Image 1 (spheres, rainbow, N blue to C red):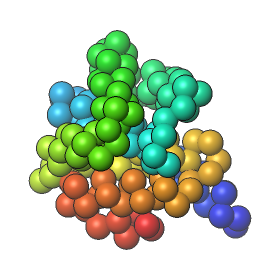
Image 2 (cartoon, rainbow, N blue to C red; image 1 turned 90 degrees about the horizontal axis):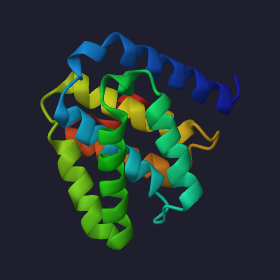
Image 3 (cartoon, rainbow, N blue to C red; image 1 turned 90 degrees about the vertical axis):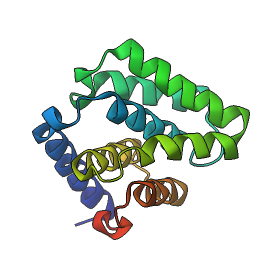
Image 4 (cartoon, rainbow, N blue to C red; image 1 turned 180 degrees about the horizontal axis):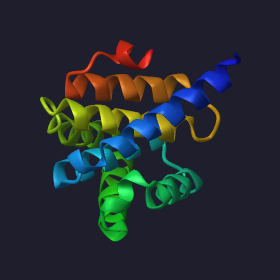
Length: 151
């Protein structure tokens, strides 16, 4: 099986897992952490271009798991984290990691958030080293070993 097929299979598995646990994640901390995760993946290479922002926002509004939240609220929170990362990447990253760390100890929610990040990172067909590093840092923030996600 090719590397890309393996990633697509893992993304499908992650999405199925998210759907199964949807009732456990419907809360503000998860919504904030998931938008922080989306922004971190979008900014993984140190820059968020308009096209990347648009594609990620489109994914957010179309993802079945995130439909339990108001799309406008998710967009506002995603834009908040993107703006922080664009204004000062290091401080924006700290703020995003803090939002993620709110899920520490809530392993189902933390895993769902990481899975969401992996789905976004792989959506363009290229799960690159910068995106993998962002996911690893998110794993560390929520207290999950990156190796659980083959990172």
